[in-house]
Length: 319
Image (cartoon, rainbow, N blue to C red; front, side):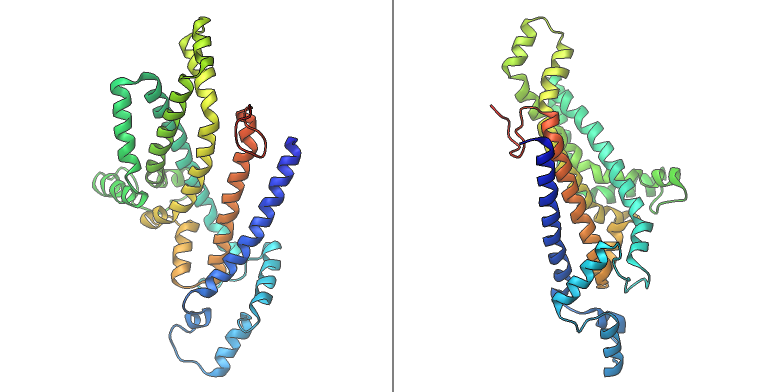
């Protein structure tokens, strides 16, 4: 199977999955207790005429399938509807809040990749006390949930020491990066431990390979052996873990954004779920699902390029 055919097939699968996910996302909110009309009325009694006006405005009396098709058609045109809470277009809300979330995820991912790969490399290559210390520190990192790390970091470095802001996003891009430093570390801590352990394990397996023994017997410098024959052959496993890492970052950002008061889509999702703001919750959920599938698609496409032993469409090393 050629690379282009494989990519086209994966894109078609992604489109079909996204369509199915859109149906689940749209229907799930209507299975939850309460209704948009109840939220809009805020517990107040209303005349049948007023209630009917709300139902007519938001098409709540229409058959479910008709509501879904109408919503899907609007989404395909970039229209996610109007927020019940903020009384503005959901697209406007997302445009205002999505940059903060994407910046936070990008910063956390950079921290995870740099520190996680470095620790995994050091643990596999140096061994001894260094490896034991890395195993212990990564075990502590993996055992610390993101929301716990957020509370600890905020209490120590923001409240007690005053080195970082306690929350918010600041003014301007530079200030945004400064405000997101602690949230990014809190978001990355658990995943640093996971990536370090995966990298260490993959490199230790590669070190036992016959090609490493042959390279050493030919007098190839140890640094080149590690870089070209050990780390490079570990990239396939690391890349697969990278897809899981990005997906986890997108999920955990809800907790971290809430703890630090970051005005991103994670905090918006939490608030919108509480107030049953159907259009906003549906839009954010669909975007997160689309990001998940995009990350998986990118990983699948990069896998055979990083590791030629991987057979297209199987994700396994060929003979």
